[in-house]
Length: 404
Image 1 (cartoon, one colour):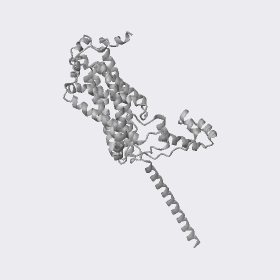
Image 2 (tube, rainbow, N blue to C red):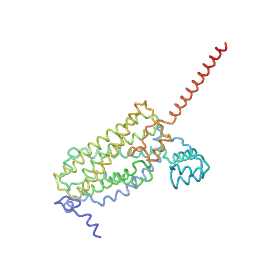
Image 3 (cartoon, rainbow, N blue to C red):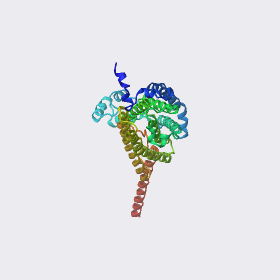
Image 4 (cartoon, rainbow, N blue to C red):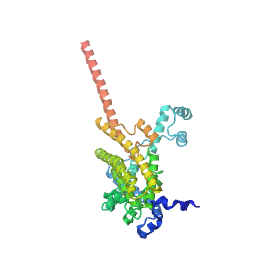
């Protein structure tokens, strides 16, 4: 029973020498209150409903304009025994399990492997669903970044980081920053609510950690009146998400390869600069070092910086994935852009083991279509046939000359 009052001890939330009475000197509307965070819960449900409407009615026509089409997928033949094994035991049977399934179903090893491959393909999300998710995030990040920049660009702490801590914690809160916080917090709550319904990616665990850290950061920084530095963190993160989601949107369409590659390179540059250079050198340095010029360390100071460091570790993890993708992109260009087919069996098995190639990159595919592979195989076959006919004709003419 005494735990709840202990949570709100002023030495946890405020620097030494400051009390809750000092905060009460601010006007009621200018003072951040922890109970304000409850507003984010209904707003999160509103975002879920708005996203459903967007993906149902607005994303499909936009996708058709960009040439987004669902690939034709051959369905696996009905087989109750294999279906039961697939749903209850494993989507990828081992060699010993395949042998037992052969005797159980009366099928060859090749037939069973083909059935499981087709069955896994059926569970893959379609292109329109992927496009809808990317489009929803793109429009939110775009609106959030523009709105955040508009309400921060003329503020002194946007240009001078020491202004983030001057007169802290008795800093009045503006209504624009209040709504900026509530909308960002509601959006991340909605992502967490739908994370088990959305497309599951390779970095699923990292995404859950990222959403939780963001929610904790926003909630704590609002309650402790870390609003000035919090708004800079949100603006910095939204800046790189815009080209990422737009690149994914174009990657799902047809005929946008150069645009997709350009946007991805732009995203990689912005991400690496903002997350690996600006964030640690400006944001973390501000909270760790510059803040000490204005107050002494307290529990909230350590907690907030630990969350920022966890976020930075995630940035490093995603930077590795991005650099690996950039290397693949450059390698593809050096090889005349002849990339492997994403529907090939090898790629399919790799994706089933780990989900998508990368995370915060979603289902970013840099592969050619299946038609390209088929056309090359057809051309190779025609070449072989022509060579065979030529050899037969040459040998026949030799025999005619010998007979004469």
